[in-house]
Length: 484
Image 1 (tube, rainbow, N blue to C red):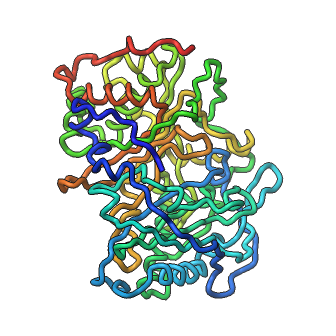
Image 2 (cartoon, rainbow, N blue to C red):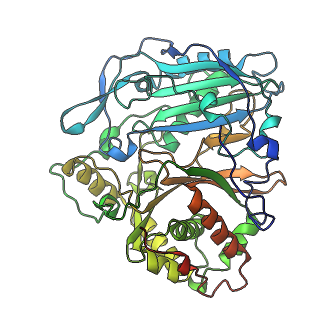
């Protein structure tokens, strides 16, 4: 259960954010979830008993955490397994059948020499929770978006199940709703897969649930394609793994965090594009939003003006290889290229300054960059990416979470369950595809900040959207004071 702390001022966010457009009752929604005892779902048929090594990209410290995903589905008797069918039974059976092909998910992680991770393919299974909730889909409000009320009840943290090593690699909870709809929630050990790999697995479960005998895309392990060279040699610059001391105590405090989601539809994106100088007009929406959010977030957190601040952009590297990684590869195949500057430069300069930094960072990712990254992991002990004064953004608008169909149609909402997740909470935001109650397609971005910073963040973003001088410097740097 979360509390909505946003002030109900008409001057706040009505222009661009849907975080307050949910009915007031939904933000305070409380309901009861009755769970059955957790159980393990093993592959439906015998699978190989072997050890499979993760890649040198997979097992870096920054991916050794659990990531939550949630999909909401309506009751719909028109689809292939809808009507009187029980989603719990259908999905349990489909998971068991899918694990025959994705059998490493049924194993357990072990750690070897040099902190190298490997999957012990034991066939023990993934953890599954069956549940019922005394709530309807409609009670969640007109626009489903993170943060979701009672998330901890819809994706229950089974005691002892969340360790990276020697624990189930997937936890799945299916919760039936009073209206006949259901919620599919999943927690993944991120070392196993990225968003594309996870959606590939979920899609396979959906296909099996709808009667397929074999997934349309067969899984490919091939993690050795992202291993270090022999001998390893770092040939690119990787500032995302710089060791940065937290001399000012500027890692985000976790005791007063506020989660809110912000909607960017066509009108909001157009309003922000007014800040782009002519030579950058072809910048993507991802690049634009990343620059805006990084700048507003930096202002809100009030770092020392001369300290370095960073934004890490997750870039899918599958197509960067020649030949490309094989179709069906479901490991982690992305990098965290970084843009670095000082807080003063980021906030005093026009938006085009941040935008050029973001575009340059994205362009850094090549096949050589990925090989250099794998080499760095081995040479430096698989370090965590820098989190001090860092913001991380991940675009899952094309990942396909919402397209996953278990037989009840596409999800009403499908994607990350909340922002701020990771080994270091509060650092990350996701860009999630979203349709608002007016039928507008756009992007919803969950943001996690301390309460004091969230208020400033909202004010800065609102100011940009309403600015009458978009190509002026638009800076409110006076708000930034040296951290105490």
